Image (cartoon, rainbow, N blue to C red):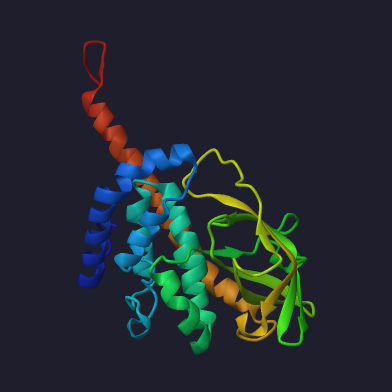
Length: 272
């Protein structure tokens, strides 16, 4: 991000803000939360205070009104210090907030948006299943309309922020086509499993989510039935960009650490 691409003044200001935040608040806590394998919820709420959970939300709706470049900048800077926390941030901001914002109705936004852009609620997205990962059309979770509710049944696996999530954007089939629903932690029939142990990015937790006759108000359907794949594909475009930015941030940090070490290392009586 340092050369070959001219950032706008707004993007440059964002980069400076996130870089300072990363150096002063993310870096100091990274090792401890990685060792404990816990999400730092207060730090996620701090992202909300800085407006980082609503970068792509319009200003009229309480966001920064920025673009994919802004999201890439934030993920690149944060991942230099704590890839685990950054992955949890991605699951909340990109997979839930950005997805929800672009697919939701005005009443849905009025009820939920403020809570997720200030970090009061943690968000997650549930797509992958035990037998269906990238083959999303093979998912088996289903939602059946019964009056003013949908009855949701199924299991979702490897869900980032799953244990902490207060609200989850869940994909399930309605009449053979994929639809998207907002499922809140308080809904009967919704539960989460034990955290899945990880070898890396441990400050980002994941688990299985279980829906057993989970009653979801019909008002929590995003858009109309059968629109889920469109929502999903549109949002995954941004997710993939941000994951790439995270990889670049990790590589940048590795390079800077190696250069610093090489400047201090002595071998055979001389600097290497």
